[in-house]
Amino acid sequence: MPKFIIERDIPGAAELSPTELQGLAQKSASVLRELGPLIQWVQSFIAGDRMYCIYIAPNADMIREHARRGAFPVDKITRIEVIIDPTTAEVPHKSRETSAGSAAP
Image 1 (tube, rainbow, N blue to C red):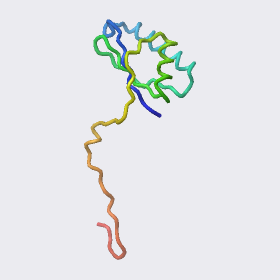
Image 2 (tube, rainbow, N blue to C red):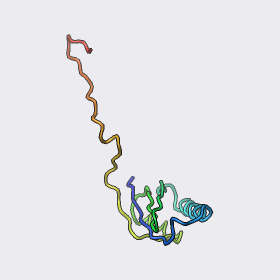
Image 3 (cartoon, helix red, strand yellow):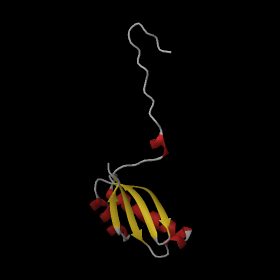
Image 4 (tube, helix red, strand yellow):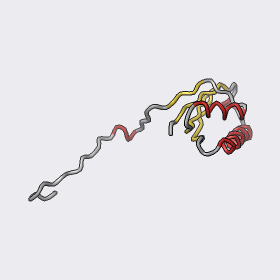
């Protein structure tokens, strides 16, 4: 299932209180329950006046519907094409194959 990054302009987002953030999360969870299991909220990050949300959904239209029902702003939706992390730097180990008559070390 595709993953998406949703960018939301929310003036003063970094100053939202824990109670306000809880209210946003509760509203989002309520709308997600209405929409069913095909859409999932993974995580959100707040930086200044922007919120970046990671969602799993079959398409961007479902994310827009979530935003419409929840009255959440949506400024940009981008499908995540590739995910890398520190393990990407690791060199894969090739398994040692043995041929007939030889023993593996």
